[in-house]
Amino acid sequence: MATEGARRRILVLGAAGRDFHDFNVVFRDDPDIEVVAFTATQIPGIDHRRYPPSLAGTLYPDGIPIVPESGLGAVVRSERVDEVVLAYSDLSHEQVMHLASTALAAGAGFRLLPPGSTALHSTKPVVAVCAVRTGAGKSQTSRYVAGVLHEVGLRVALVRHPMPYGDLEAMRAQRFASLADIDASHPTIEEREEYEEPVRRGIVVYAGVDYADVLAQAEKEADAIVWDGGNNDTSFFAPDVQITVADALRPGQEASYHPGELNVRLADIVVINKVDSAEPGAVEDVEAGVRALNPAAAVVRVASPVRLDDGTDLAGVRVLVVEDGPTLTHGGMSFGAGMVAARAVGAVVIDPRPAAVGSIRDTYSRFGHIGPVIPAMGYSVDQIADLEASIAAVDCDAVISGTPFDLARLVDVARPLRRARYELAEVEEPSLRQLLESHIQRWKTGPPA
Image (cartoon, rainbow, N blue to C red; front, top):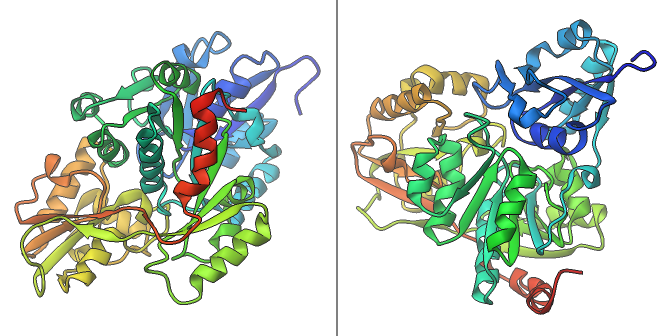
């Protein structure tokens, strides 16, 4: 326990995103609190850095160390931590309590910050798109919502959940209006997956580290803000409408992951996605789970058809499937859009796992549930090289890419490539578009209520 008059010592558990935001909003300027460290997990290579003084503020002239979460108990003891604060997402409820038990056993308290204490308030209307799990379909929903708002004449800024895996000072507040803007930021593959498609559609994307700065910049050019969440995190901005995306392929998980369950409970609208590919009864199970948690929410079912770009016929052709990395890793899926497309066209999928090299091979070892697909991992130059080498090592005749970014812009595929893309498709009324209409009309005539 902190002695009388001493600053309370806090350790923030994170994954380079929510942790920095919570610090900036809640702890940075509090003279009674000392954040002694952040921990890092989920993403390779984001530990053994420092949160820089320029972002940490005047109370932290040397910045704040970022250490591996694997040493949680030792750090609590060595740094005499009073309280551990959890600040990252897509954890099972069981995993949350394992972290809590580790902190408690080492002598610290354990806390979750309420979303109202960390949410920034905008002068513009905010539609927040959150989810139950990583890979549920937030990005396609965010693009769809942005398109609806744009069609009625509103200027839209899409603000993406942070992915600050590089130079934190350089990434303080980022704006992407072109592919050249994205390239100039030297992004990871995960960043490309989230930024490229909306930018191609003319949507300006914002991201960064300090979301007060990000929001202030976005408000200068937008009539409405669309929050595009990461993983299953809650919104950094107080929403006028919260949409939570649930996955019909993963029934039951709406009530078993953090903060996915929280997002269901906070939702104004719950979108049950992928109803076109779910097992019989799964959609009804998800809806029943949602309504048990939040009977007041409007529930809409949508399809997520996979569209394969034009190209050579793949029926009977030996193909390698490359999928979105986060969906497979901490999202827990064994396959994604690429595999769905391969099966639909009758391609013969070649198992790439025996040919994987370096960090891609290590990813299979760490995430044993991944199926016969290559996760598009690329958090460093070396990992991108491993991805390219792993693709080259597979004996196949074509490649299907289910990752949202243009794989051929970054790695040499050396074989015919066809991209598989998910898009949101309305299948019932009232549709998501109709549920948004009353809000849109109010925003066009005045400030949000």
